[in-house]
Every structure is written in structure tokens, then in C-alpha cells.
Length: 407
Image 1 (tube, rainbow, N blue to C red):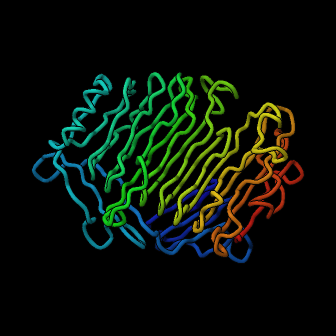
Image 2 (cartoon, rainbow, N blue to C red):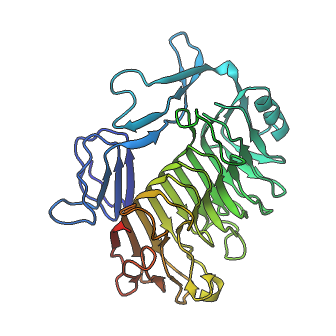
Image 3 (cartoon, rainbow, N blue to C red):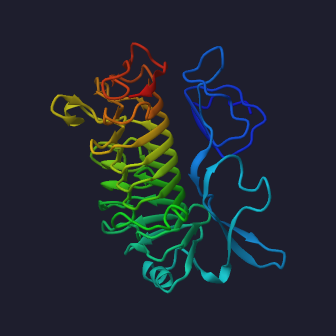
């Protein structure tokens, strides 16, 4: 694999026969043949590579398949713990096949009430391609429910509702869906759990969000205070992209308003490939204990019109991209980057890219970086994590500023 000009990249549970090149942030988790740890980039080992030997807990996305008799089914892979390589290297992937008759196959012409009736009667759900305008939120309440999007169906809330709420229950899978904001502000677009789920079965049968994306504006005008809120414990977030639009339709500091992309209140939540960009306050707030993030990518909002419009607190410029709450006692982060490009022609600064309790165990965070993207922008990021790490501004454009370990 020649990695070309990819600025950041995530490889999980794969097998490689070689890897070369890297730009800012390349992360490998549970990968056979992954390059050796090498961060920041250096001539002795290449890089920049963050290599995690095994993925702590994973669950591959469900998929539609046709069996030998010509019948369609959905295969739901089982959770894996401390895994390396693919699930199918040594035989069939562990998991469960569900016949298609267990699923309600929805189309954009189906009402939210019709879809909820199907979910409430115990059916699983396939969302076929298209745009679903929802006049009520979809409610996923049964443990082990599968909600599978084909062709990235898009859910748009009407009248400020929450597009989907997921119960605090084990084994639910939500995959392959885009959540767009609607014209009326929603408090959230997807909420997982109504409180902490304390079940002995959760860790072995975790709820998972796979390939789930959020957009605030861009495709059409939209507003939402938060995009994803996770209240349950033992949830896997696998390839999440939450984006407040910096171009497209309905875009502007007071138009596509959105405070925060991802809020995690549950304990033992694990995220791989977490992309959160351009939100107007903290981009990620992590309130739960025992959390892990393996690869985080962020661009701060491009468009604060003035420093006074973008202040975390009096005397604290900007908002951190990733906030670990002061009450958190355990958190692990690997390969986490935050970039700035402020394009309103005035100097805008963020005091910190990452804010975490200094009381976390030593080396809880690994391989952090900030970068000033372009001299066409103004301002920059003053510190990488808390008051540790140098600044990334027009004085050092396109140069990663790194912290290898914190605290």
C-alpha cells in the first residue's frame, strides 16, 4: 500500500503486506503487518504511524447476502474482543443470520408511523436508498434490533424532532445512514440510550453504530444543537463523521448553527475513526469513564466572524475540539488530530485543541497533533493539549505540532 497524499488515514482489523508514506496522522488498530509505531514522522522509521496492537472491542457491520438456495438474509457479526486481523481469516465470521422476512423493508414514501409500527412489532429494519422526511422520530427499543441502511439513506427531521432514539439495550446495530439536520433546530439527531445501561450482557453484546454520518447544512439548510448523543454504556462507534457544513446550501455562522457533534455520557464507549468537524462549541464532549478513541480527526470551524463570537469562557480563546470532562478518571486516546483554518480575514485563536483532566493516568493520550492548514487563513491553535505543546499558526504553516504522550 502506497499511501500517497492522504493527510490522515485509519486502518482497522486488516492484513497488510507493506505500507509506505504518510502525511500527518496514520493509525492502525488490530492490523496484521502494520508498520511499527513511529510518531512523529522520522527518517529512522518513516511514519507518522500510530500502531495499536489489538482492537479492544469491535463489531463489524451487518450485511445483506444471498444464500445457496437463492434466499436473502442479513448476517450480523458477533462482537470481537482484543482482535487482530479479519473476522474471516480462519473460517466463517462468527455471528447470526437473520432471514429477510424478519425485516421491514422501508422506502422513502413510508411514513415514520408505519416504520415505527414495524419496529414496535419486533421487526428489524432495512432502509432502502432515498431521503426520508420524518414527522416523528424513529424509535428503536428492542434489544438486538438491526437497522441497516442500503445506499446511505438520509433521515431529515421535521419540526425540530430527534430523528432516531435508541433504547438503553444490548446488541442494537445502526449502520449505513446519513442524518441530516432539518430547517427547525433539533436538540439532537440521534440519541442512543436514555440513561446508562447497566447490564451484564452489554459488554459481550454491545450496541454498535457503523458508518453513521451527520450533516448540519450543506445538502440543504439545517440546524441541530447536537448531532450524536450516547447515553448507554458499552457502545461501539465505528466510522462516525459529524460535519457542520463549511460550504453548500444554508451555510453561515448564524445559519447552520450547531454546538457539538458528539457527546458521550456512557461508560466504556469505544470509537474508531471519529471525524467531527466545524461545530461551533466543543466538537466532542466525553463525559463517560473507560472510554477509548482510536483515531480522531477534526477541523475547527472556519467561519467565526470575530474572536468575541467564539470564546469558551472569558479569557479563554475559542473552544477545544475534544473535551474530556473534569470528572473523568479514565480515558485512552490514540492518534488524535485537530486542524485550523479561519477564513474570515481576522485573527481567530483557540487556546487548546484538547482539554482533559491532568489527573488522568500517565500516558492516557498518545500521538496528538495540531496543524495550521493554510496561510490564506488567520490565527491558529495556541496549545495542543491543555497548556502543553506549541502553537500552530501562520508562523509554522502545514507543519504538525505534536505531543507524543500526555499527561
